Length: 222
Image (cartoon, rainbow, N blue to C red; front, top):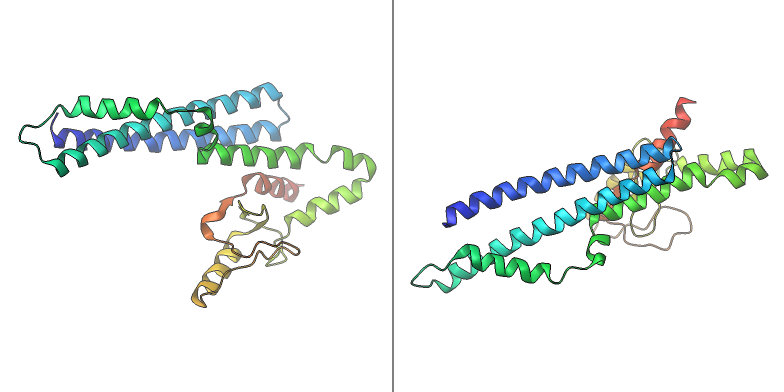
């Protein structure tokens, strides 16, 4: 195998990664649809299995790409007189990485963690209010609507994002503007949610709060 052939193969593999990522996004949306339409728990669990299968493929692909990249770098660094069998070298590195696999690797997959997080929030929104509603429907509605209000704009959120660190949600544009403004002043951003002790909100810690957006959209339609 030549370096050019490996570069071409690596490029194709990286394209495959984007397909896996898209597949995980779709599986997350389907799972949230299932919760929203009160489907059977078994169907939701099946979507989690699909996510874990995707996470397994993603890990294997990452190892394969890393094995070939390390092999190429090693050969270029050592500059041997005779070019070794690159495929065998890469395969050895790949198998070594795969031998260290554990289930916890999959649990730490970023897309899988987002899936679990949003599923938990969705269940909380759609199934967690049952007992409260039995006690006092007005209180339940008021509490839900309070969660819809951005702590920065004091208006109902349209594009909520959630802070992975403290769990609070904000309107995307408002929190990003706040981060940018404070960055120019070389200051950290404190979480604007009253009572929160988190003092360093970063853009990289924000993820779309799809579960909350669905509930807000559903409420607006009513």
